[in-house]
Length: 388
Image (cartoon, rainbow, N blue to C red):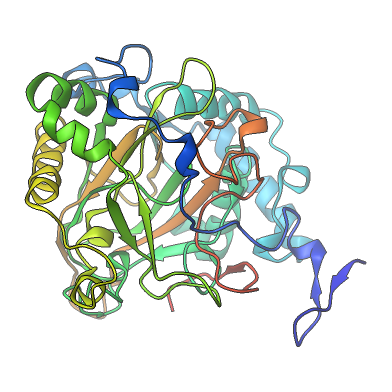
């Protein structure tokens, strides 16, 4: 059995079949960034959609698991549990889904190169409980991408849950650990998955928007805002999730072009990471947001809201969304009073490297298996069954 001995306690590499570390956060390749005049005047094709395309046609973006599909997932999850393999050890090779795999292959293509989202329904989380549900959910995820770390603790199975942290402390608190509103954003992965374990009393509802529809709208209505979003003048906070010697912030763009021929427009955005830089601008380390940037930030959010598709995640629903060309948000929420469970979503961040059909990103790690995510020093992957 192969082991890693660079840490105090040897780690079995069998428990981490896709490798220990994700590549983490880093600046773009600045010479690979393109100026505004190189961007398309408008975008067309399968990645472009409008909310009216889907608002009254949920059958186009939902899939209810059949009894046969649930039976296959259940049997494979039971076999995985019987083998006593840790959650971090799940891979396509030890989670065979001979029937569902065809659906998941088509889904992956649609996520990467099509509309970019789906809502699964009928995942029996209450019957299975958190452990088996996590196994089956992560097993599904192995057919879409590679698990990458979501925070400095190495969590590859994340938990979106209100832990009582102060959402106003945006320079240090990750908003997914609060009940605050999340503005339209993209996570630091190629695909994000959310499995609903428990719903809130009220709120916590989901909205998504096609960034290519947003792009076309801005190009027509506010090309000045689009130009500001394309310029590499934006700084993103690392919120202290840094390895030794790394900068605490990254200079980047909001909207990029892929590398290579016929490049597509790619968006990387989270306003909470842009608004939290006061401690650095006060110290003169980064410039404060300009009036043009503040306006662009507001116009982008308002445009996403205007062009959003609304959906509600019920218990047992799984939402998968691409981060390359779909932005997502959630409303503020209020939990049931104890002892009722708090709103709880299990989250996956999945990587799709360039060599396996992923987008050709202007970053050094575009062809790395576990590109993106958050990596701090040598923290190995961790998969817990609840938030910590």
